[in-house]
Image 1 (cartoon, rainbow, N blue to C red):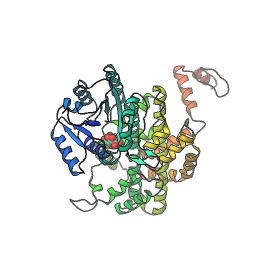
Image 2: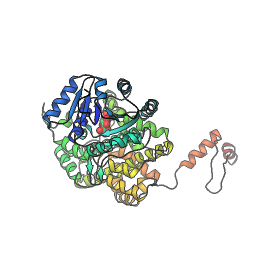
Image 3: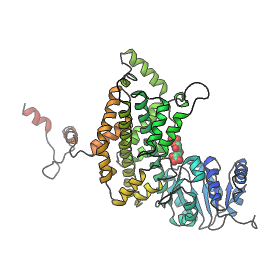
Image 4: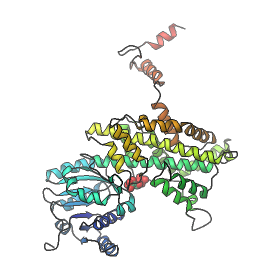
Length: 487
Ligand code: 6PG
């Protein structure tokens, strides 16, 4: 082993993401060692490396050989299941590692686990990065979006590799040093929360077009293709148009109609909403998308509720609304509603990031985050360039909604947005994401809210005190006594 040429970097954990990322790194000209506990995966990767262009991949079959096959300071990426398997993998390798070497965890890890591991690594003189990797299988192989956080030195050691491996957009590779601690994982977590929001909003657009507008899958495919040429151009809109085109191999019609309406999840969206609550940041669109996943899981209960309420006299509205609908106008309205709803959802995600950045002194650069999401990742979209520019114009922007450009776009779209939500509500088609975004917009933009009444109630029953609009200080009133006296 000692005599063989050492690899520039190593990757352990050769499931789908790991294999593809390793091949991507090798293809960019960086010799890589690979390791997996189940050794057949190592052979599989070597076979692929041979087939996909004789790529410089060296297979290793023990943790010791793997670590010793790397140039110093060693950089070693692990891509195993988040949680305990990461700790086990680190334990297996770290006994052969030396001060200055670095571990990079590329999984969807809870940021506090990364922070714990950073200090554990530090005690051994090791460096640590928690790196969000987005883009699925295809992204890993051909260019993901990378969100490395933790040791800057560790990032610097592999900056050249990450810069070549990441997706490339016109303003650079989709990678940047995110910040210290678990910031890379946190940013990836919020990316996933936004991903949930986007997917929910798209599914609502589909629901309205199909069940209010009466559009066929063929028409939907065309519309999403068209949308992907304009302001909504994005990976998720593009794949949605493809989905509507796939025929069912077991029967008539399209496959999409045969898929059970229960959404799975692995947890990052839930963490996003939990963090939002912890930090007192409103993320209603993302929360609505999470709630919808929960409700979708109650398939049996929903079927029963449909039956019980039908028997109780509820009329099935679906379909009936489509008569007399101007399809062309509906499509145009839904496009605008989707776009405006998305802006609100991204505003929520960015504000969550800002709150965490302040709490942890991460000093996140929001313009840069929007830039590295322009390519490679699941939420990649043309409009992220506008988000990037908004934060470049004003790094302290309170909300995307009040960026002058976005503010104009929201105002232009609000009539269409309200029409779509109104139509959906009266047709009984739930659009929780669009409604949440619209309510967020309407709440945020109103200079005066009915919170005065809530304050009065709190003061009445709990003497919680209130502030006044016209003089400073905290006030308490004997509400009941005064009210009854004046009667
Ligand atoms: C990505 C994705 C990915 C995520 C899946 C599954 O950026 O490539 O966010 O990391 O794990 O999308 O998420 P759910 O199973 O929770 O929907």
